[in-house]
Image (tube, rainbow, N blue to C red; front, side):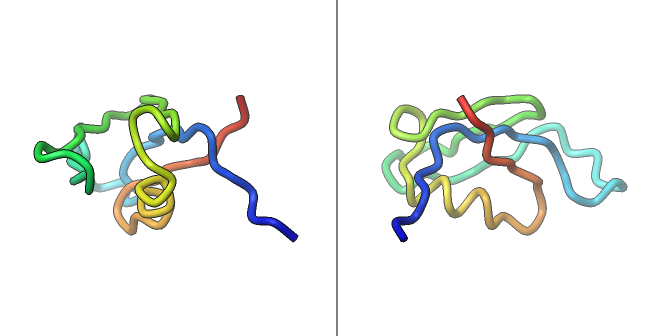
Length: 70
């Protein structure tokens, strides 16, 4: 069975409820400057980030990032 492609990601926020960080700085492999992610931000795979970067965000240990449908 083929692997399902991620099309959009929602930035939920820090996993630790005691973490009051407002921004997650994510270093993109394709750009020099990091992408600053905030709660509620929506990312489109193929536009703002690559599929590889999307997988890295989904596996992030400190912030919750969810796959959402279109």
